Length: 542
Image (cartoon, rainbow, N blue to C red; front, side):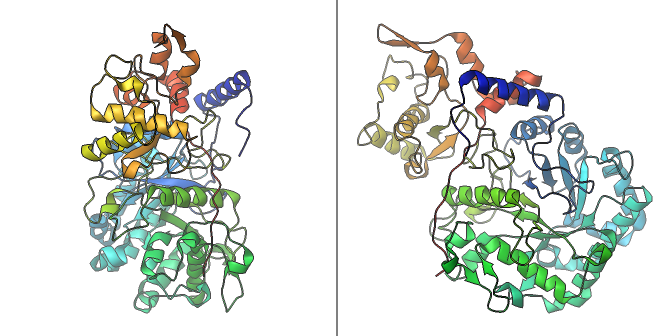
């Protein structure tokens, strides 16, 4: 972690210079983008997936602004919506576009349909030639077809081949075409050295797929979730190992066949894939191994307390933060040191409209309104979601929390928690608006700040949430606000200027209304959406 105190003027100067570079499109904030972009080659990078089952999802143009402000340069979409692609074209991001499972039959049975799809969905957003990167980084054909829609498996490879041929005909063979497979196609993955592909798929589908990927320099796309591996292991895989937490060498898992040491489940799963591919004698162009691109990985921040006890904000924060640092450090795996796979975190927003278990709606880094579900602690990891230069975070009442639970938590904060709740009393600066959530948010932040923002001090039995958006409004200044430095006391009352208050405001509100534009918008929003670094300690496998 860098120094938190570098001087106010130097900090502002550095921030302005940084934002000017964003404004002039000269900054590449994550890793250098290779010509293939999403092909798994070049420097490793971290991207995010973007699902759309979200109440009041940001408009495409607002989403593009959001990605720029968060310095996200790689995204995976599950379709190829022209409105979304048009908006993203100016965002500086590169996108994996998807072919939904229900379109596989048409594309797999008709090369002409595949050519028309490329002409309509890819060509308008591709570079001028095969050596000029455009918006489209790769095409993901279907999603987990062997398990999600096995009846479409016979047309999956023909669809991939037809799309690849159409791209080649358009001089866009640098855009790789592949299909995201579920990790469940790999059997007996622990220890990694004994892994192999499902025999019912290996020769009929996976080997021909790998041969095509090798011939076209495309990656093997995989959705890889240590969370599910841990949950299904019946206690064999410890939580710490799934969360990348550091362990002494004496506690590392050792593959008895290779004597390689594994400090985390993610690397073990990747090496299991490498072994399974090697067992089929499939190699990439030039005789090298077929690269692996992790098209989904992540951790849910909330789930059913009894069925999914490990779906918590702290665990989601630990997994995704450590994953980002792991990829940034480029260690590779024990079997392939230095050959680090790029990954896409599932997902950008909580998809609150998704059916199924409680956790299905809680994989996002952000709520649908753009406020963070939790703060990733990745400062110094290359810039991705790591814009915190002021270390300003706040604790507020969660929007979806039960009001009775919020009231009970506020009563505790203002009572046994010994929080100063004077400001939310009648006649005081934060009494209006006079509702439970507004009052509770002030009480929660007062307690959170008084505890030095310690881990767990914003939990409040699950009804509190950390945000980087300053909740101060009008004359109500929250304890964590930098506006406190501009507040003077006169006759016991807090005062501040309207100009300063307006400058902080609600960044997400500005995003939705279009009140702020251009450089000033980015400056103010980056100040309000920031991330910080933590260090984690843990035990390992027993």
